[in-house]
Length: 145
Image (cartoon, rainbow, N blue to C red; front, top):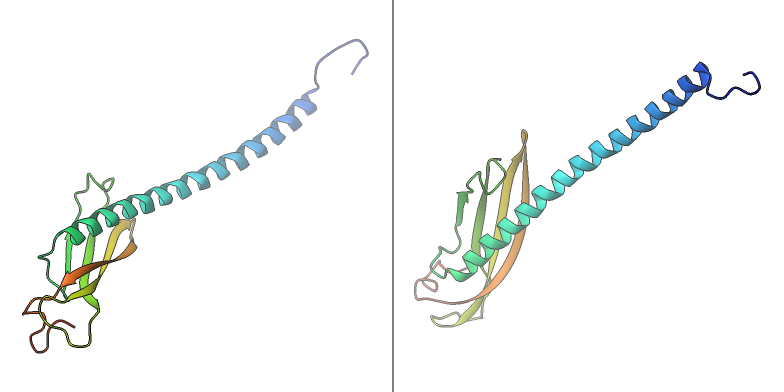
């Protein structure tokens, strides 16, 4: 450069452009990875909320079948459009030595929420417990445990 003139040479501008392009492409790659991770966390948060809500419904409803798997599907509007559903099972967890009708026991409730992430099936599980009073049908021979 001649003395007294100000500005950049073409080579300096090209080098600066290449450095800036490399920096921006690295930043865009990191941002893309972050967004994919955030979407996955959002799916797990939604599944956790749905599983807790289903667990609350099951704990509140005393007439559901015990020792049997039951399931259902969620409305796609609740799950961001992805196919999803739930499975649950209620089973006796802790029994007294001589069970009889009216005796309280502890039931274990397992809830699994599933959803599709592309072709892959994802799941989220929660487990809860509740007090249950044995009925005559529960202590009939071969039932209840």
